[in-house]
Length: 279
Ligand code: PAF
Image (cartoon, rainbow, N blue to C red; front, side, top):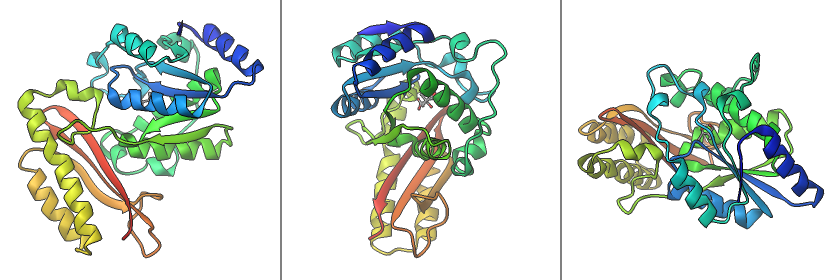
């Protein structure tokens, strides 16, 4: 596995592969790797000849009072895990490589970034599209894989790729859950054992909401009841059922529904979702 510390090393590696006609899949991460990330790596391996993983904690997607300074850094363990998965190259740039002096980006996240996470994290998706675009420029992958847990992010990236006609296929990786149902997340490290126990309620509530929707229960009432249950343990940022393609209200034309939530458990923000076909 090659560890590329700067843009030049990364582009040299990729250029050699391109000359050889290899298909390159890319998994962007901020490190703190867990089984969810590794499942994206396996998906990448199944879809390409060469796999690149980036590890870069992107400052521009964090708000002022967020956890940028404390974001888990487990680089040594991450590299060990990626080597074990037979990843071909890991890109670990620093801030100056991604945002060189004088760098400006006019790139803004598209309409799918509105609402949901953006309400509490204004500018977050602008930061995400800017860093992902930079990484795409440097790595020029054929395929890039993003987890479904960050569902709004996935749609925002797809929208950017379509808007800029980038020749990159975006694949979505299924949510990987702990045995309890809690969606794997780097931020789960912040939870105490007791909080982990409480957190499993989130997926239970989402699963029940899905079932109730399929049973034809009025969604607004079901969501209201679910909020009442969740608010016993969590501070709810949002819990919404939307059209999974447009992230707008469900209409008669909706074929796929997304139930999405963001909640706080103590000071830890958790997001989760469940996506399913309209019955
Ligand atoms: O999902 C993440 O970990 C990040 O938002 C990403 C895509 C690596 C961009 O920094």
